[in-house]
Image (cartoon, rainbow, N blue to C red; front, side):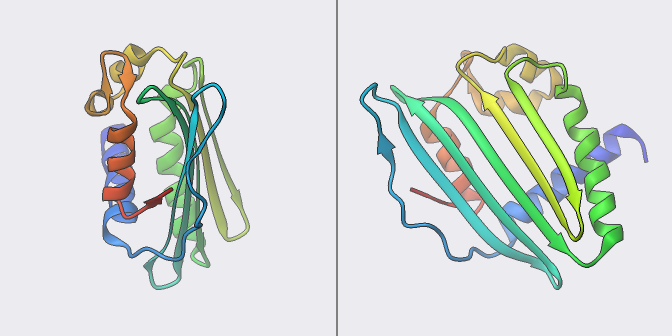
Length: 165
């Protein structure tokens, strides 16, 4: 499978996870704003993607003056289908590989037993957003003038079925 096909496959799977599956129980924690005006938001979604495939999505991000500062997401896929998890892991590794050298952008992909865990941390206050757009032009739909608006990020997650508080 060539690189473009793998990236397209990962995007299809990502869209499938966020947009097709149903939501589960979420945390009732509300936004928290600290003394410096930084607000923390938590978005969650638990879903059954298909028979035997469970997904847990948790994102915590901070924003100040309407712009996202940092994002930390953790997504876990659990399945007894080892082939599915290995294929999905390979697709994720190929999709995230171009970001490996980007400063202030960290990712980790781990397969442990029947759970595939992907963790991503992005420091939008410091990352070179032009570099992100150069890697994948679809990043431009979220990044405007080098920044990410909190309302745009929240809308993306909520459109995908997550509950943000």
